[in-house]
Length: 262
Image 1: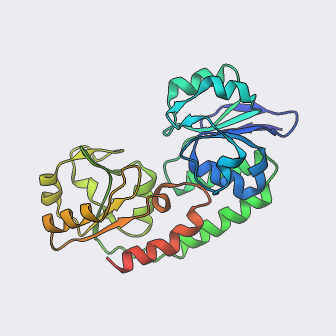
Image 2: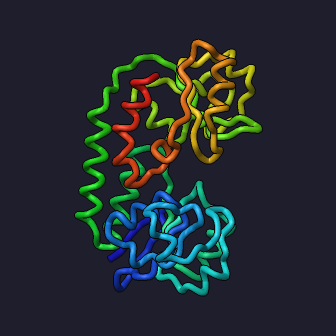
C-alpha cells in the first residue's frame, strides 16, 4: 500500500516495516503506545518514555547529533523523523540509504494527522484511532472561552527565548483561550529571543517556565516573580506542552491544573 508522510514523501512497502528507528522522543513514545516497542531497534538519548525503551533499543545520538554509522549498522526498514527536531543535512544523508518518514507538526491537527498516518503505516489503525479520538475529545471539552490573559511561554535562557506564533505550543495556548504574549514582539514567529526589559514592557498575566529544553527551576521562578510581582509564574512540565504524540492524553488534565492555579 502507498503511504505519504507529512512532507509529501511517498512510500510503498511490500510488507509492513519491522525494524524501526525513531529520531524524536514524542514519536518514540507514541510508536510504543500503539504496540511497536519490540520493533524499535534505535532511538535517541532523549527518548525517555516508556522507561524501558533504552533497554530495548540502541541509542543513536541526539535528535540533532545522529550517529549515522550506527544507524546504518542497525539496518532499519524505516526511520521516523521530524522536520523541526532533526537536522536537514543528516536526514538527507539517511534518505540516500533508507526510507525516512518525516512528520511536520505545527498544531494539534497536524499532530493527530501524524499519529493516524503512522498507525496506518504499521497496520495499527484502530490503536492509533483510539488515541487520536481521546485527545481530540479532551481538547474539544476544554473551556475555550476567551479570557484575554496574555501568556508568555519561555523555553530557553541566555538568551531568553519563547514559543511564538507558528508553533505547536502556541496552538495549544490558543485552544485554551489565551493570547500568546509573543504577539507583542516585532517578529513573533517561531522561537524569538526576548530581553527582560521587553518582558516587563509586555507585562504578561502568566509566565510559564518550561522544564525543557532549558531546565527552568524554582530559583528562576522566584527571580521572575521579583521582576513581575503581579504575574502568575510557574515552572511547568514541558513534555505536556510540546510532545505531540500520545503524551497529549495527559495534557488536558494538567493544563486545567496549571491554569486553575494561575
